[in-house]
Length: 394
Figure 1 (cartoon, rainbow, N blue to C red):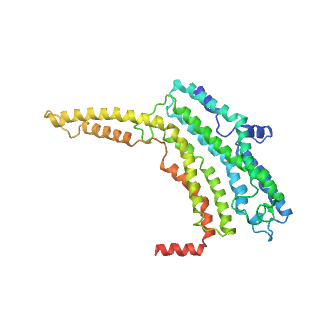
Figure 2: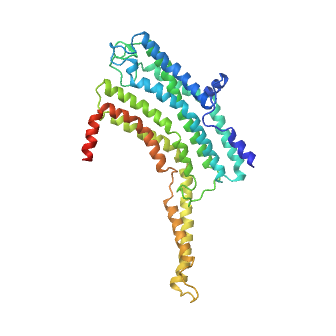
Figure 3: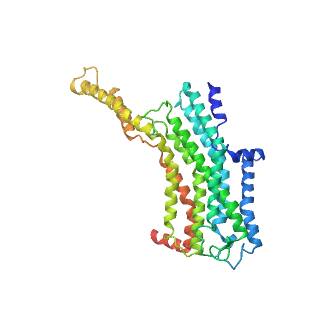
């Protein structure tokens, strides 16, 4: 049976697989070994950021004074390809490892009975086959490239001279603008969309496993019948949330630095991203809600009946009928069992129907909000912030 469990997990990965991974393996760049991830990251930066720098330098748009936003002073493009893009690649190893541990926990915690391990293994294999299909990533590539056919310049940069175009606004694309539009931006969008696809794969796996004959206990101390650990899988995606936050924050920084926007006028997209990112990561956990709702309803009836029967017996023995002189309540186990059963029933009543905990919510919200901190310092000088803090403390 140990060999069966091992074979069910040895080849499972949420991140390894698909058309791009197949291509990288053929080029000798596949895998999630740290040095290979670093090489993939450097390669991605070399084909996204470096050509933009060289081409803008050739056309005098890297640090030029003739345009409002030269390349090296563009917060959005530099943050996107020097910070966010590396995170999207380097996060693969950590997220994959956490999801492998999470998957293993269904077996080690005995949520899946030994007799059902072959069924569990088939679900993993089915998910892996779907992950390895070329068609999903080809569709993602098309979706990543389509915006380049209709949008010539970055959001919040239209109507202002920048390195994307020659002239102001929707002018002719510069050489760097062409590379950004048809190489750099589509590649970044593809990597971001691929993480959404992986999130969908994880959600599908969780949905399929939740439909198995799991040994769930409503009185489990995690308040999720023993499924509380699955929220760690969503928490693992916090680096991706952070990467997306840096992109939003850098575009807002451009608007504040070059277009006269204020922090208060840009708070809506900042709040919207934090809420959207958190909801996007929490929503997949709703797939187990029907199972938990059914279990909670059943447990409330069963434990309620058990508590009622026990309380009636306690009442008859110690309240209605006088116990024998040799039997006293002090030191008796009856009150202890009364308290224990009552506590178990309270746990059932408080059991959640979504396996999410506060640490996971806080981690996701912090990952979304943290990139906005530099924007605050950009919009409000440090001395003003210090004065405001001192005034509040006084």
